[in-house]
Image 1 (cartoon, one colour):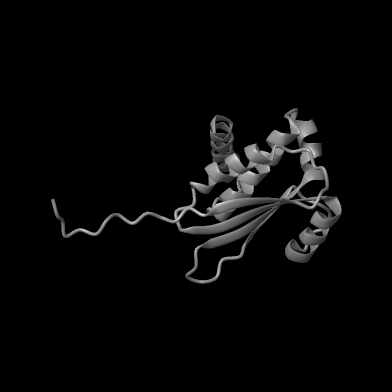
Image 2 (image 1 turned 60 degrees about the vertical axis):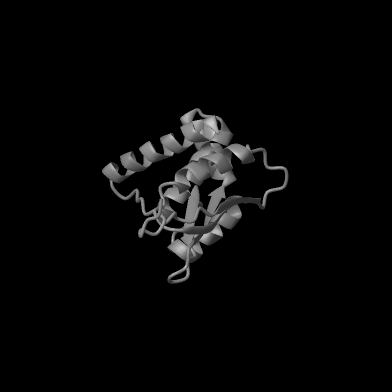
Length: 153
Protein backbone atom coordinates (compact mmCIF):
# COMPACT_ATOMS: atom_id res chain seq x y z
CA UNK A 1 0.00 0.00 0.00
CA UNK A 2 1.38 3.41 -0.93
CA UNK A 3 0.44 6.79 0.35
CA UNK A 4 1.15 10.35 -0.63
CA UNK A 5 1.49 11.30 3.02
CA UNK A 6 4.98 11.70 4.49
CA UNK A 7 5.69 9.59 7.57
CA UNK A 8 4.75 11.28 10.84
CA UNK A 9 7.50 13.48 12.22
CA UNK A 10 8.98 12.23 15.46
CA UNK A 11 10.61 14.69 17.75
CA UNK A 12 14.20 13.98 18.55
CA UNK A 13 14.76 12.69 22.09
CA UNK A 14 18.08 13.83 23.35
CA UNK A 15 20.19 12.59 26.17
CA UNK A 16 20.44 13.43 29.84
CA UNK A 17 23.93 13.37 31.30
CA UNK A 18 24.98 13.42 34.95
CA UNK A 19 28.10 15.08 36.35
CA UNK A 20 29.21 15.56 39.93
CA UNK A 21 31.70 18.13 41.14
CA UNK A 22 31.49 16.52 44.57
CA UNK A 23 33.81 13.54 45.03
CA UNK A 24 32.10 10.46 46.46
CA UNK A 25 28.63 12.06 46.40
CA UNK A 26 26.19 9.42 47.57
CA UNK A 27 23.25 9.82 45.22
CA UNK A 28 21.42 7.32 43.05
CA UNK A 29 22.61 8.44 39.65
CA UNK A 30 20.48 5.96 37.67
CA UNK A 31 17.31 6.94 39.53
CA UNK A 32 18.05 10.64 39.07
CA UNK A 33 18.62 10.12 35.33
CA UNK A 34 15.39 8.09 35.04
CA UNK A 35 13.36 10.82 36.74
CA UNK A 36 14.95 13.58 34.64
CA UNK A 37 14.30 11.56 31.48
CA UNK A 38 10.65 11.13 32.50
CA UNK A 39 10.36 14.92 32.94
CA UNK A 40 12.09 15.36 29.57
CA UNK A 41 8.97 13.88 27.92
CA UNK A 42 7.15 17.12 28.80
CA UNK A 43 9.37 19.05 26.37
CA UNK A 44 7.51 19.31 23.05
CA UNK A 45 10.53 20.30 20.95
CA UNK A 46 13.60 18.42 19.84
CA UNK A 47 16.17 17.96 22.58
CA UNK A 48 19.93 17.64 22.14
CA UNK A 49 21.48 17.27 25.59
CA UNK A 50 20.54 18.19 29.12
CA UNK A 51 23.33 18.05 31.67
CA UNK A 52 22.66 17.59 35.37
CA UNK A 53 25.51 18.95 37.48
CA UNK A 54 25.78 18.24 41.20
CA UNK A 55 27.57 21.04 43.09
CA UNK A 56 28.04 22.32 46.64
CA UNK A 57 26.87 25.43 48.49
CA UNK A 58 29.88 27.60 47.61
CA UNK A 59 29.58 27.09 43.84
CA UNK A 60 25.77 27.41 43.92
CA UNK A 61 25.97 30.67 45.87
CA UNK A 62 28.42 32.04 43.28
CA UNK A 63 26.13 31.02 40.38
CA UNK A 64 23.08 32.38 42.19
CA UNK A 65 24.76 35.73 42.64
CA UNK A 66 26.23 35.88 39.13
CA UNK A 67 23.11 34.89 37.19
CA UNK A 68 20.19 35.72 39.48
CA UNK A 69 21.70 38.65 41.39
CA UNK A 70 20.64 36.96 44.60
CA UNK A 71 22.66 36.25 47.72
CA UNK A 72 23.09 32.83 49.26
CA UNK A 73 22.55 29.39 47.91
CA UNK A 74 19.50 27.79 46.29
CA UNK A 75 18.49 24.24 45.51
CA UNK A 76 18.49 24.25 41.71
CA UNK A 77 19.36 26.59 38.85
CA UNK A 78 18.43 25.88 35.25
CA UNK A 79 20.10 27.34 32.17
CA UNK A 80 18.66 27.12 28.66
CA UNK A 81 21.72 27.12 26.38
CA UNK A 82 19.85 26.54 23.12
CA UNK A 83 21.05 28.30 19.98
CA UNK A 84 18.24 29.76 17.82
CA UNK A 85 16.72 27.07 15.61
CA UNK A 86 18.69 24.27 17.28
CA UNK A 87 17.43 21.44 19.50
CA UNK A 88 17.14 22.23 23.20
CA UNK A 89 20.40 22.27 25.13
CA UNK A 90 20.43 22.94 28.85
CA UNK A 91 22.16 22.60 32.17
CA UNK A 92 20.57 21.95 35.56
CA UNK A 93 22.76 22.70 38.58
CA UNK A 94 21.69 20.90 41.75
CA UNK A 95 23.10 21.92 45.13
CA UNK A 96 23.76 18.73 47.10
CA UNK A 97 24.13 20.62 50.39
CA UNK A 98 20.73 22.29 49.96
CA UNK A 99 19.17 19.03 48.78
CA UNK A 100 20.46 17.39 51.97
CA UNK A 101 18.85 20.10 54.12
CA UNK A 102 15.57 19.86 52.22
CA UNK A 103 15.51 16.06 52.39
CA UNK A 104 15.81 16.31 56.17
CA UNK A 105 13.11 19.01 56.35
CA UNK A 106 10.69 17.10 54.06
CA UNK A 107 11.59 13.75 55.65
CA UNK A 108 12.50 12.08 52.36
CA UNK A 109 15.65 10.20 51.35
CA UNK A 110 18.42 12.36 49.87
CA UNK A 111 18.37 10.44 46.58
CA UNK A 112 14.67 11.28 46.16
CA UNK A 113 15.19 15.00 46.79
CA UNK A 114 18.09 15.10 44.29
CA UNK A 115 15.91 13.32 41.71
CA UNK A 116 13.03 15.74 42.36
CA UNK A 117 15.35 18.72 41.85
CA UNK A 118 16.63 17.19 38.59
CA UNK A 119 13.05 16.75 37.35
CA UNK A 120 12.22 20.28 38.55
CA UNK A 121 15.07 21.75 36.50
CA UNK A 122 14.09 19.80 33.40
CA UNK A 123 10.49 20.99 33.80
CA UNK A 124 11.76 24.58 33.82
CA UNK A 125 13.40 23.82 30.46
CA UNK A 126 10.00 22.48 29.31
CA UNK A 127 8.49 25.89 30.10
CA UNK A 128 6.96 25.20 33.51
CA UNK A 129 7.21 27.97 36.08
CA UNK A 130 6.78 28.16 39.83
CA UNK A 131 6.06 31.83 40.46
CA UNK A 132 2.47 31.40 41.67
CA UNK A 133 0.85 28.86 43.99
CA UNK A 134 -1.06 27.41 41.03
CA UNK A 135 2.17 27.08 39.00
CA UNK A 136 3.91 25.41 41.94
CA UNK A 137 1.05 22.92 42.34
CA UNK A 138 1.16 22.04 38.64
CA UNK A 139 4.92 21.68 38.73
CA UNK A 140 4.76 19.49 41.86
CA UNK A 141 2.25 17.24 40.09
CA UNK A 142 4.66 16.83 37.16
CA UNK A 143 7.59 16.20 39.53
CA UNK A 144 5.59 13.49 41.32
CA UNK A 145 4.78 11.85 37.98
CA UNK A 146 8.46 11.91 36.98
CA UNK A 147 9.47 10.33 40.32
CA UNK A 148 6.87 7.57 39.87
CA UNK A 149 8.09 6.86 36.34
CA UNK A 150 11.68 6.93 37.55
CA UNK A 151 10.88 4.26 40.15
CA UNK A 152 9.33 1.98 37.55
CA UNK A 153 12.14 2.36 35.03
